[in-house]
Length: 105
Image 1: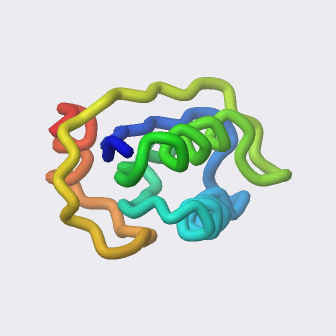
Image 2: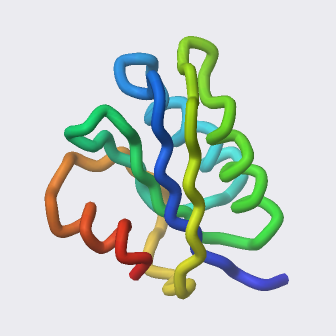
């Protein structure tokens, strides 16, 4: 099966509602690797890697999120699979990774 990489930006009420914690659980249960982090503007950004079907499932979950979230917009971009991740983590905000995620690298 093909391995893929997706860069995902989620907007709405997605901070302070356990979005990242829930995403980590969903990704780990699906065998998807990568990271998720809050952005200063109130949105959440993530990178997913793995087999195509599980990555698609986790990406689809982003449109709903956890029960207290109110997702208003999801942007999904494809990137080059790298296999660099060994699990799924919640990361701190840093400008370099935000720029990389937005650039689709």
